[in-house]
Image 1 (cartoon, rainbow, N blue to C red):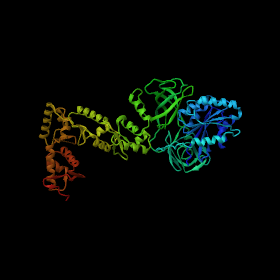
Image 2: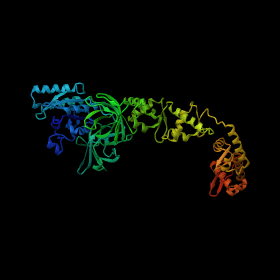
Image 3: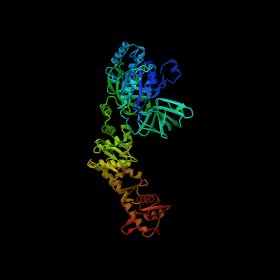
Image 4: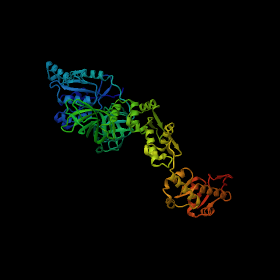
Length: 638
């Protein structure tokens, strides 16, 4: 049976939480000198409890004093069940109410109410205390929770509490296993002979001895030397367990509470957290951009709460809020968080994380609100489509895992179900996915229309330029595969390496047609000694015409010069004749064959090298594989 349950205490200072844990487990959770001197819990304490059914549950004992609520929050993250402790001689107190509010904000749904110190009151006082508790818990998740009366001093009620605990946790569901492993750190210390040790509640995944892990934020690498669960060395730790991890390759000064021990891929620290937010009825209205204290996992971060679609949240009200934090944190969709005011410091609200990112959200765009509400539902197919359609860009599988934070099997099942709506594109090492909505085609048409208008004499935009402008993160291979699937029936054609609207035609104006004729005439009159660009430019704006004529096969551009197609064909025929008799060719020979100078012969030879008609070897040219004519292949080297 897995030990995958964590019990937490909560309640006002000096109501007997630590004494109760000591009586239940025999473990003293107050370990600091100041705690023993003052008789109150300052830091988090940890113990374990053997349930009657054989299961061993971890226990987190939290401080009750208002000055140490920050420490209480660090330990409350990850608990499955709470023991709300109320002293019978005092009843419900301020910290009882604040702890209860925090538990509800953190989504804790199961608990037991323990009336302690019953040895200090008579029956009438005990009933009054019980009534006080019932009134305070009305309408909360503990309204119908079991009530157990206990004296840690005499032991009365302890056996009953153990039995009730066993009954409450019997049906506790197992923790889901995600594609990554994470454990918020709530304690860091050095153990003589072992080195740095960190503890926490393992929220996701599993840990094994020898694992390489990262501590974030900060991206510090370490290796797990040893694992302990409830004081016993283990080879593997599972979700929901309290774990002590002995780390190798790391110094104590590098680690602090609030960091997350992480193993896997897909998560990185971010400083923008969007989520549902609930403001407690007892809190003042919260204005947008107010400075707050953001508690998530075991850490606290300062930031500002930017309200989506409103200027403030009223007491008892709800809103969508993006928290823009001063420092990055590692957060996961579905995690709960608590907000405390900047000053005076008090708990004012909290909620559930919808998404963690590096991007600021626009406050008043309806699409932003709609996307957040959709993602809050957590439905896998909707999550996948939401992120694919946002920004209208393909995403790789690893990017989808990081953004949706679905388990790999959940993502694969969602993609399979969306086969008709999502394109799978081969990529470098992993597939990419694109929503088959009309947005990309619309953007591509818009790009082509603008290109044709700016370049009327060019048939189309180079495919690579279109990729860089539209989808720079998608490689050339993936873009080619995407075009293969998108272009049929789209009204967009791929001509060689250029994309164009099907209806686009290059039409010359009368002036351009006249200039084209002059240009071709000038090149035809000087086949092997054509005018230089500066001379040709005297005819008019020839640059776009030269590109067009080159694409149409009427002109060859090489070495900064323009040769007519007639010149290139004549030079090619001369090459064939030469290699029918000779096995090699020098630049001087080629110059003499054409009756021109080295200045013009060299660019032509370089063009023939690129076309495969010749092959350069030192200062010589040999017949290339492309040199074939009416008389057959060129002779082999002799």
